[in-house]
Length: 221
Image (cartoon, rainbow, N blue to C red; front, side):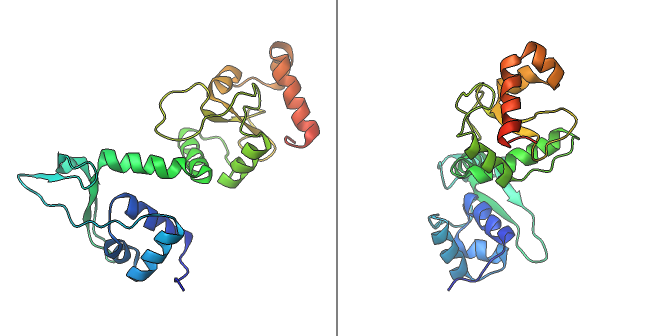
């Protein structure tokens, strides 16, 4: 039976796998047995990487994914620590980012976790939401914009889309907390901006009615 790993260790396995490390390299950096890595990759439905270290010729190496020769700056490098060795990713930065996008876009929870992290980086407003809170709200709204009922588009690396999922604090100033947030399209959030309920009652009556219905249904409080 596989050794029980922490959530942080599992996340490390996913990250190291995304960077193209093989099971032995992942095991060395996570600090567990190679067989444990193999078992967890099976549980995560990830295919083992059969890779070796990069081979440098004239300061260039071939990406193990796209097979293009790239310079050193085109590969991520992780510095050595007292418990792990330093290494270059065997995938170039472009291939690594593409794989990360794929991993995130296959999991709403991963996307919502990154969404909250980026929101915290952009604002000083109080944020007391988790990825589970966002997923629950997404299911309640059936994947539709709270204000327009348009289908919400979520994921990374998808380019610009007016229907990209956005988090709206219904009453500005209360913060991103339970009972004061909904999911909507990015363009809807920009239109609403910092409008309070009095403004919306006058100038956005349809959206105001939806908010009032949200209070009656217990979605907002």
